[in-house]
Image 1 (cartoon, rainbow, N blue to C red):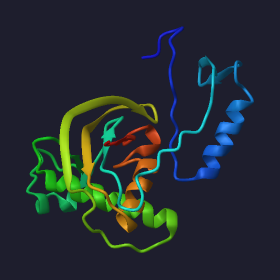
Image 2: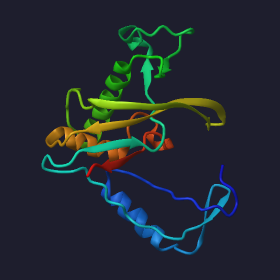
Image 3: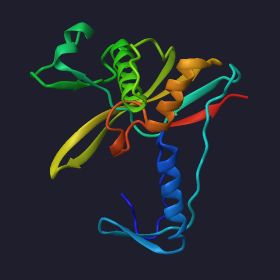
Image 4: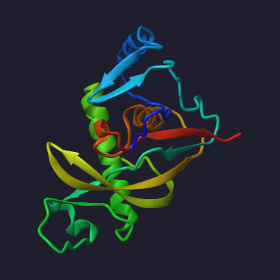
Length: 197
C-alpha cells in the first residue's frame, strides 16, 4: 500500500549499465517535478546510480540478503526428482519451506545460469554456486496479473560467501544486478549486498 504523502524509494537493478545510466539521466530531468505511474502521481526528489560490486581478487566475505521474496517454481516433470507429491496435478509447484532445500538451491542455480547464458550468449552448464544459505521466512504475495488475482509464494534468505573470484563471482554479480529466482521483472528476487568487515 502506498499512502498519499508517503516517501518511497524505487530501486531498479539491471546488468545493463547503459539502461541504468539512461534511466538515471531521464529521472535527473524530472527532479522536483511530478510524474505519473499508472493512476498515481509522484514527485521525484532525487535520482542516482548505486554501484554495488562484489569484492574482487578473492578478498572479503559477503552476504547476499533478500530484499524482496525469491520465487522458485519447480516444474511438474521435476517434482518426483525432489520427492514432492502435490495434491493436484499443477504445472509447477512453488518451493516452500516444507520442501527439501536441495530443490530450492538446484532450481535457483539452474535459473541463474540460464539467465546468464541468455544475456551473455554463453553455454555454461549448471554447477554449484550457493553453499551456505540461511532461510529467514516464507511469504505469500497477492498479485493481479492480466486482470486475474493470484498468490505468489516466495522466500527470504541470506546467502553467505567466503572470498571468491572468477566465474562464480561473475554469476553472483549478475544475480545481484538481475535478481535471483523467477519473476524478477515483477520485483521478486531483489538482493542486497552486505560486505563483512
